[in-house]
Image (cartoon, rainbow, N blue to C red; front, side, top):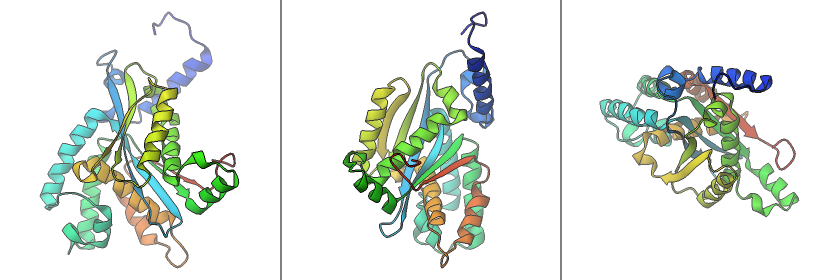
Length: 277
């Protein structure tokens, strides 16, 4: 839009505020057109997501990280070098947590050092982290009470919730409206409710085809970005499922200390379908 064209004052102020939120992105992650290198470019905002939640626990979690596609490529290269230096093939957080498999024999200091180095690499390449959790029993009660079979699974609800919070985030909303920009998702393959996630994305894309790109379901072992999402989902779910008998204060302290360099957005849905959902 040329400088001589008039736009309403409220829109102008909103654009300034939104662009300032974009400037909070790590410098290396900012889109080329924001840096003034070119006026137009094709950008894919790729969000890598993973789920976490045991059947016997009350909360299920979906979480992941958002960045530009070229930054994800650089992250994979840098993270692979880090993994090689520690002699590991991939990061499966449940094995990391319980010190088994590739992490057998690791002490507390080694775990903390590795996690901090991993997140140092991640923080230089990603814009934001997002986590959305659902209280499963309450979701099922409300769904049954409202006779809303079409609402699908708690995991599908998580996906809708996390997508909604991404597109409405001030630091994402502005960039997603620029020409040639779309938002795509990479989700761990093999989820029990993968079909529900795909259906929700397809329905949302139909309503805004220019805003959304694609969704892919991939093997977590092949993408370190998905392993980062697994780390976020695993620890977020463990901390949310704390009880008086299992306060999990050590988990919270470890997770907070390791991930503090990234701006994370957390949400727990406890009511649904018109009651604060």
